[in-house]
Image (tube, rainbow, N blue to C red):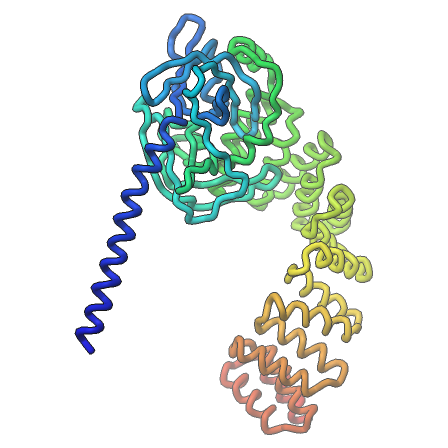
Length: 477
């Protein structure tokens, strides 16, 4: 028997070792395949002096993507291939200022470019990735790591955090998965001594709007005149800080963006969002109202206003803001849910219920909305409706609180056996849930089972719970 166990163990170890060795062999092959697609980018001023170095990669035979900040303040640029050959960049076809992307037109001999496949879906957290860049001019350098997080930045979209180091010169590098597909564009944002490694999702490449070819000199001249371009640089820095939930640092950059371009609605929005996350709701309202003034058709700005108003207990303004958000974005279940909460605070229960019903219609697994819907029905003494809501909640959130809600509703319509079953489930999930034990005790009393009710009383008394005295009164009227 021992021999058999040792033999199996040795077989498993050998298999694991083989898999690890295969993985190690695979990575060099992947790098070898991707390297011809990656380029180094060097930019120059009018006198021919180097302005910056960065990275990029082919997305078509004559197109290279990079970070916008790589090409800023330059008069011309050239790309360096991994084989040492250099080619001039003809100009810029598209800019995504908030995504910090630039699409470049290049002219290379046929068969030179090896475009990378762009993946449209968002990568999974923990997914292995490889970055090929040019840190400090060391062209073709490789770093690997994982996707540490995929963050949803309110009012912007997704940002991908990666563990692979992004050093100066690697901005614009392709971030590829183990199939060699581009999942993002590496971006280095250095702010106040920090180096933040993240990637812009590759799906933004497909969203670029290609326009007329612009020379670097024209682009630089327009950028210097254009307040928005300068403000977007601060905005990108703020997004980098948001990706780390560093709202205090983020808001500094968003404020700088609004100072640079007072008509920058997105920057006002992010400033309001950041202030709100810090609990500074008066400042959040000021910024969010300015965003709404500039972009009155943007539902997200009204959600910001609603959130800060609710936090300040101005439920009327919160309800009005959320109502406007639901008009502008009819498919947003979170706005409907928040509207319901605000209406509940105003005791407008029929409208509150309608908002929760709309929320679950849009998102059938919306547990929080089912919970509030059931509670609203319960307050109206519509117990059959509350039971239906809590039964749905049980599907998505089968915990002590849900079963206690369900038990209370059954108890009110006289279905005491069902109530006892629900309360027993509640205390099974959480033996320390004192209210559920009290409810179980009173249900036993209604069934005439005083002994079982007494057991619940003793448990509550031992726990020194205030619910013990309430149950004692019912046992000894």
